[in-house]
Length: 154
Length: 224
Image (tube, rainbow over all chains, first blue to last red; front, top):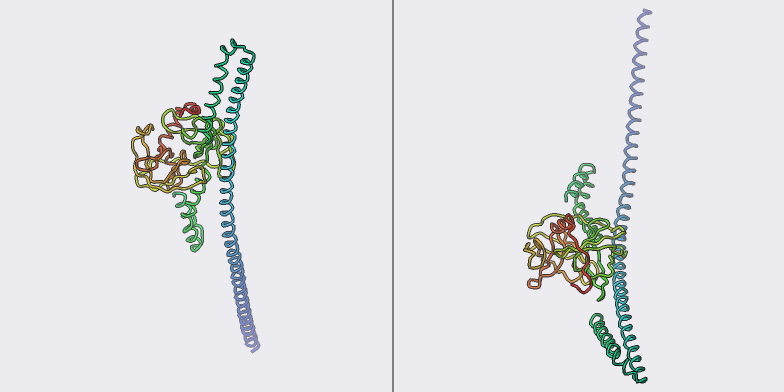
């Protein structure tokens, strides 16, 4: 009789322990489900935040691309203007050098004419006959170099 | 185009499908833009100050210190300068010209901004683009089609000469003719008066000149 009551007590205890374990397992599962749910929500929130950042970055990148493109275009225009100004500068330098050469020819011509004039005034006909033609021909050279300058530079 | 294909494959393999599709759709445009950008940077404006004034032409970098243009662009120069896309002016240190044909090569101490790769033979009917500075103005891209290749003998050019439909003008001389991949396939040198077609020296002739170095000093001013 005593032994029967002991067995019943053990069975009841085992059943109670099993029930307790079941309740505990259900609680753990519910907790796990809730944690998973929160994790999913956190991931979704994070993904939305990243998507927003991506959209903002993409539009900023598109704006930057546009800015770079227009700046590059402007740089090309300025480079082209600079090249043209340098063309003109070189043209003027070439023109100036040619003009200096023409002027030098006319200075020689003028000096020659004055030399001939002085010789004529001094009645130094011998000098005139030897050097006169040569001195006067420098004026023809000067005229020729002026014609050449006009042909090249207008 | 091989680069574009590889990039497309990488994008497809690594990225999310939607993003990969978007990237893949943009890659051909990006590749074309990249080739055009390089060509814009690699095309040079050449200024020749000679005894009879200033003239301009076009050219391109063969390597960081060597540029290619036409013989007649360099001839007679007392001073040669190169203008780059970013506004720099670089003085040419030495220049020489091919003994046969209208090609010239110049070297510079300063590094040129972009080297243009040389291409190969192109078939008649291919779409090509001429880069250059017509009338000494701003850089222009002139689209055209290769009509054919004819004997260069009537033009005093050894080998063959390309005839293109591109509307080139004085100032385009020495500019590169590029294929769809941005590679140099020819060098513009003249306009055929009878047909108004652009004439270009094929890149094979340029390669031959670079290999043989059959070069002569610059012709003096007024000789050509």
